[in-house]
Length: 245
Image (cartoon, rainbow, N blue to C red; front, side, top):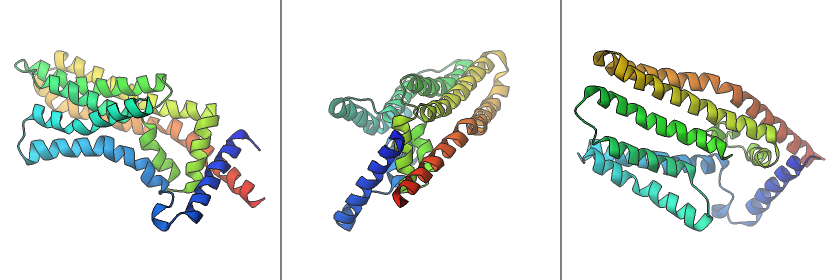
C-alpha cells in the first residue's frame, strides 16, 4: 500500500469518525462547500462589495475599491499573524485593488487610459506565476471543487496526492502556469495595441483579446486538468479497494 493511499485512508477514517461521533450539526463539512468557501470570501465578497458600492450606491471608484479591500486585507493580515503564512487569494485581490486605486488617478491621454487596463491583468498574471514558483498554485482553489465534485473520497484523494505525489503537484502547478501565461500574454497584447493601434480600434479589441485569452486558458488548461482527474480517480479507487479488504 502506497504512502499516498495510507494518507488518504487516514483522512477518510478521520472524517468517518467525526461523522459518527459528533452531533449532526457538527459533522464534517461538505468538501465542495469547503473548497468553494475561500473563493466566495476572498473573491466574490470583495467584488460584490465593490459593485454594490460603486454601481448601487454611487460611491466613487477609488473609495469603493478601498472599502471592498477591507475583507481581503483583514484575511491577509490574519493569516500572516495567526498562521504564519500568506493567504494567496486574499493577497492577490488586495494587490489588484491597490493597483486599481492607483490607476484611477491616470487620466488625460486616451492611450494611457487604454494601457492601464492591462496593469490589472498583469498583476493577476504575475501573482499566479509567482504562486507556482512558491509551490502554492493559486488556481488550485478554483480547480479543486470541479475535480472533487463534492465527494469525500475524492477530496481525501486530492489531499493525499497533493501531499505525496510529485506528478500531481507538477500538473497542479501547470494549470496555474497556463492561466498565468495566457493572462500575461493578454496584458502584453493590450499594452502593445494601446500604443500601436488606433484608439477607436483598441476600444473594442481589448475586450476581444481578454475573451480570447480566457478561452485559450480554458482549452489548454485541459492538458493539466485531465491528468489530475485521472490521478484523483485512481487514488479514490485505490482507497475504496483498501476499505473493502
